[in-house]
Image 1: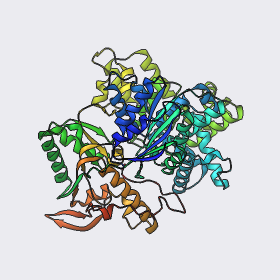
Image 2: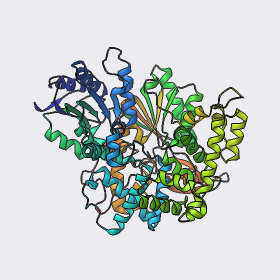
Image 3: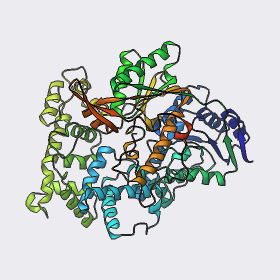
Length: 621
């Protein structure tokens, strides 16, 4: 069929219907403002009605949730909610196959942000300075996302090889995955284990923002057909820091059919408002949203973009106080605290204990548990534990069991004794929970071990004072709130999580330097080259957020704030002054504040990353 240009997403559907049901390879190229979800869902339904197995794959979790809502809303569709997955869910599903897991020596378990912190401490045994180590790890993560580690010679220096060996050994001991590894190891495991691929047609949304490893996995699994949609705007999703924008063009060059959507509909109207301070800005936005809803706009047709989770929480509270239904889409999933410092890890420790109560074989959680309260999270002892396991050809979990069964004088080293106290404490807590507790006893037990329950957590123990439901507490206490894509509510999302969303009206809040664009694009402490590349990255992010609006976008900013508050917010200050005894700071408006085409036009001559090193994404996502 070749390439064709159509005037709307609906016309793109007509072109897709001309494709053969089986074996098609097609690409749909569209603007960020085009909502292709209904079209792709309809095409997937057509494939399913023809009797072929089909799955919709999305670049991020909230887009997958939206597809599930679309499928659930159509009772006549042969597809169900399980037919739509994020690319990470697809990869973890593959890793769940015992043959794949055995081939790569990992399980279908991704480290969360807090577990990544513990891993960082374990890799510090390399002796590198923390700053250099972080940069090297980021280089590893980016290279893995780009499949560079397929070549055994990808690491050049001995230093890199040593650090990577330490990192890999720690991950294999945990049988867990880095977030960037899921797709790469899923593909590698499928090939290494010789697993026969199932017959499957894949319909892919936002192929452009997937990593190269994810794109490779998708192409490997699409045995009976692949239809992929990609955006012309090179803006990353908050869930994939290393997108391969070039991958869509490579696929399009090989595809039998390429449909380009050039919709001539008018662009959403744009306006900008400046308010006195953050409180005034948030009050204005809350009142404006309430006014829109009173005028007949459905809550689901309003999106509020915020710079960070704290800002989002305050705005969400302000909206809910006015009776506005809100869906919060700004949770990062990381529990605040420091596992090394006494008194600062209570919630981290509680979350780890509850995971171990649910799964006693979760060695990743056990590793975290053994490190609480030590400035090095006992990484020296863990290093020796790994050496003990390696010498005997056993797993780290088996090594722990062996050493626990030995008396101190029988052990080859005394350093493992550092783990005895936390492991004894864990055994005590497990026995107490297994024996059964009253609600009062459970609360007292957790508090005695430095894990006091909040009021909400205590309520999860149930209404029966004679029986504490510890299982419910373990399941629900730290469950991340899932966004209800079908609910008619105003969405409050961080800038990066506006990617792929569509609403009639969008409010972009905190439109100041330091928020949008991020601080590394405007602060003089970064090099000129760094700021130049970062500014283009942030320009793409701004365009991505603005593209979410179908009818109107309102950008709001604050002009001044308390000096202490601006330091916490990390925004750009233009002037410091005193008024009525209070120290205030004037805040620089966003360099994009004019909303003109000139300031929002991406400069194609600027590279996406620095030529001499990776520019890591530090934007407010």
